[in-house]
Image (tube, rainbow, N blue to C red):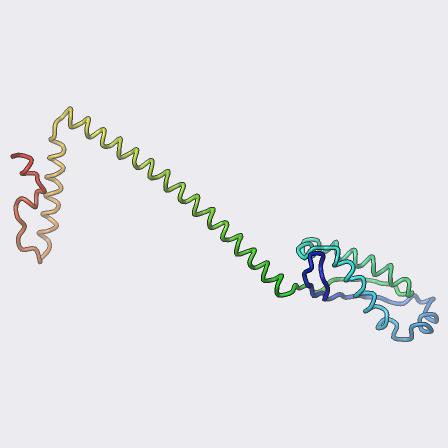
Length: 196
């Protein structure tokens, strides 16, 4: 467990493959003992890992993971040579963040989704406004055409439409079993009134 440049807690697991310099084995066993790798590698690995991780922000650890691994590898190779240990391979095998960072990432994703939803709502509203304007212009043009037609041809077309609507209503009402009586004036919706 170590901290990043932006003070986030990170849990890391590091795998180190190494072997001693064969010509230095007597010196290694004399100074460090036969458990040299258990004495040296954990401490220098933690030291290097903490130093390298502290140079990066939490999000950089994900986006630049291979670069971080390379820096750790090179630093560990150099430091292990001081103890006559040769490092064959170094890999970050596990990387996880603390609960606070994970929660912050989740909140950021939710906020981004909310922004996208808001953009969609605004775009939809703009399209609905444009549609309403186009519809109003169409209705205005339609009213103008009807007005022009009635001034030229008279009210005959409007009377025809009223009669057609009254016939349709009468047909619909006659199919219903619960309608017993419809007064004559109501079925034509004022057609007769226009004649008087």
